[in-house]
Length: 298
Image 1 (cartoon, one colour):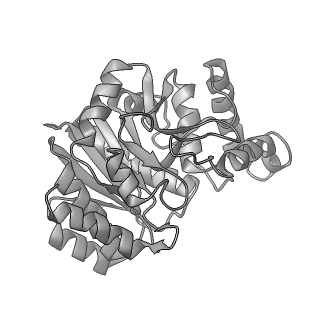
Image 2 (cartoon, rainbow, N blue to C red):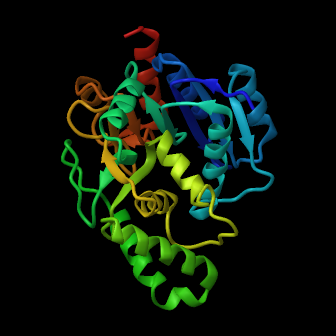
Image 3 (cartoon, rainbow, N blue to C red):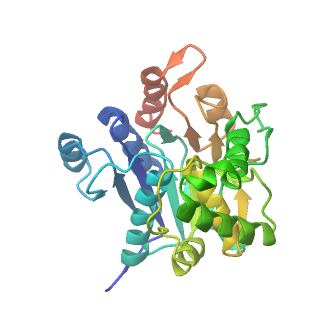
């Protein structure tokens, strides 16, 4: 198969609760601000033909990679994304893959350049984004990483105890990955947050070479997709990187924005999560703020 050579692949997962207008707005932000050659892939778990039609009508070049049935969150989302990532590997030669939640937004010009440069300068990093470690992890805006770290540590502990008996095959396979990751320097709770992150091409290739894109016949667990990808990255001998410090482009937190919209603009941040709220501001108002900025061509 002849592959197209591009700089970056952008993957946006959507599910049944995603509002079409917000998905379209996020795609518009990608098209406006990413200037390098790129391709957008929708990892479609929504089972909504009207939504697919509207996306395709406004963005005819977007690839919609549709699941045959709804896979849900956690390892279902991991499976859906893995299939989209494998599709990208099969069809494109690229330097980096950017994953954006539908409530993430691109707000500044050419964030892909910093991402590609980061992987070039850090060849052992396979996955990078908002790096969180353990129970507490401060960002540059003073936000403490919320309960996600505790939950993921607790899930790993349960995996080695009572929950193991519920899904022994799946947990056994994940346990083996955890042991490999620990041997390679992984520490419990270490992760790259899934609201938006970037994989290097070599990171995805190594996951697939090790049968992890996706891992076959997985069932529901308490582990989140981003935590699983973080463990898997370590298990194949690569490391995690931080793209959310200093002049690097990410500004992400679990729920809501990490700072006010204007503060994020002033800090020259370029990829943000989540647009759902900032204090009293709701998602429609936040998106309109950044849409006005796009329309002003700033």
